[in-house]
Image 1 (spheres, rainbow, N blue to C red):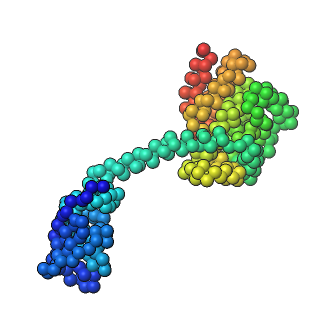
Image 2: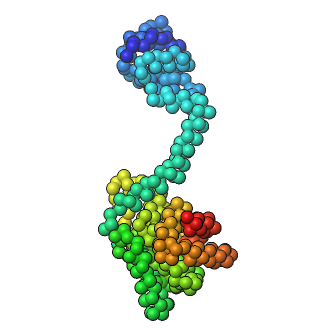
Image 3: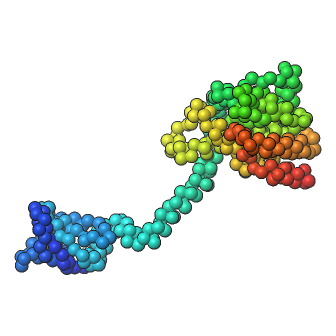
Length: 353
């Protein structure tokens, strides 16, 4: 480091014992020389303490023994600080304080970065967390989630006749054998309104380990079992792509960051409590729904040569949701899906290939 230039500062001296100030000069060079009432006192430069600058306030240089020297000769003191390396970081803070436009720009940039992290960073972290969640914990997630949904009367025992339930289970095996991914798929038929409109209604949703719940109300809404199989194939797409895990993790927000940094897994009970808010109320992202639609389209076109049954039930679900707008139910999963018209148009485009 080059030797800092010698500077002489004019200011006032306080002896540290009284509030009386006395005119003085302080020369800073190889040593510090304080001139006061015709007398000079020398100090080692290293023994001086230089307080960081505060806009509009005299600079303070602390002397040995509790005395201090205050000056408004900001420019020469700043030049000496730069040359000697004093208060490097704090000078930057003071500069921002003195230049409010720059300070506001810095605050705006900080908020922009935070917003970008929330919009893109957390979803990316959630997707990565979902990918690395061990298969061994998924069964606990399914079990605890089902317990929570039943305890809260979001779903209840199915009222469908046993013969009808057995028929749907046989038909589901077509989807189960096709879906792949090594998940232990199972279909649970449940009443979606065991305690009235507060339930999940006409709905189907997938849990992380391959448990798919389909409600009696959705079965009643369908005009053919092909429609139901299209919905079930769609739900297997959410399982294999781990959309449900990613959605719940994203719902945890900044808590997910702590989870990843500490290496702790989300507990099964925490996951279960987050499912209604994250999946059933909030729905999947547009990208997730579109991807699951394409999975279902592969199944439908391979079996029936068309995705029209899936298009039809999606349109009917949308109409049912519109009819309930006067009394919305907060757990209606399909209300939060991408615009149904866009999904149907995308399915028609796949059929046209």
